[in-house]
Image 1: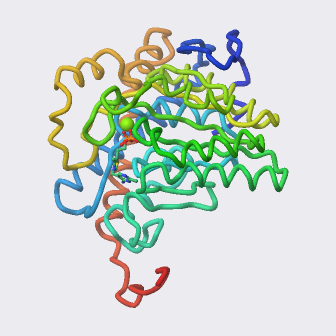
Image 2 (image 1 turned 60 degrees about the vertical axis):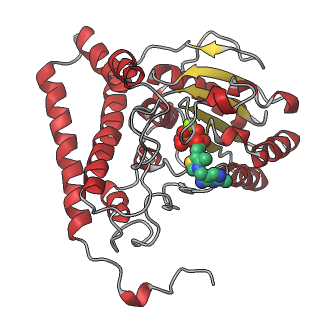
Length: 344
Ligand SMILES: Cc1ncc(C[n+]2csc(CCOP(=O)(O)OP(=O)(O)O)c2C)c(N)n1
Ligand SMILES: [Mg+2]
């Protein structure tokens, strides 16, 4: 997505304790259409992945991103080509947002040779040099030092790129996160830490396991500025990401943006979800859904019609169905591949 999409900045000044940020500049019609298409692509892809999992066509772990789409799409609308992305196991949306091919992602989920890791990595382990996507990491928090290292390389090369490093509210309690913060600030590395606070870890609410839940302030002892952002509103996400990325790219060092978001589905495909009420999930879907917000704006502004929006959805479903078709007909890796790409 073009970074030039919006250089408009919000009026709100950046400070070390900015508080919740709901400031944004309005989207143009084109930007709203882009946001809608990108978020819908992720949602329909994830729904299809859920179906294939239910049919026994996907093995191993599978963590869906449904509900959180505005985060990765809003950030993507603010970054430049070449800026790196690294995230956790909840990674399908990030890959699609970087422009990675839906066929290759779906085929990796089904363990086929046309997948991004030739069918040997699965949901949590995909990479694309071309799209600067550095995984896909199953160890909670492990991507944070990796993203910091990517930023070190950027600074060393002086290439002006920024490493967008995503992690969850649960991961924010990991020790390696704070070692990374220290080095990033000490060396003024071009890294943006995006904490996707979806309110839960695997099966526990953040407030039950975290001594403090304002994750935007977790960099305070390192003097890293941070802000909390409405992660269900793609406009607020993009505005905050523009501020954070500009800060990092201009040599000021790391920046933290805590995206307040929500996952609708279970932690992974096997989650009895005893830790939250169904009504809570329904309320978020009904009142805060990131895709519905954009749909409504497009209609209210007279920029689109129900028919046009339904057609967009239909087209996206067709692309996703084609990726499922590919992923279920593509051959599995050959037995001769068993010992290739494996560290012994
Ligand atoms: C080091 C480590 N500890 C524990 C786990 C098991 N585990 C997998 S996901 C997860 C919860 C992480 O929650 P959060 O960071 O909030 O991310 P979310 O799943 O909400 O996206 C845990 C504890 C793991 N994979 N790695
Ligand atoms: Mg979480």
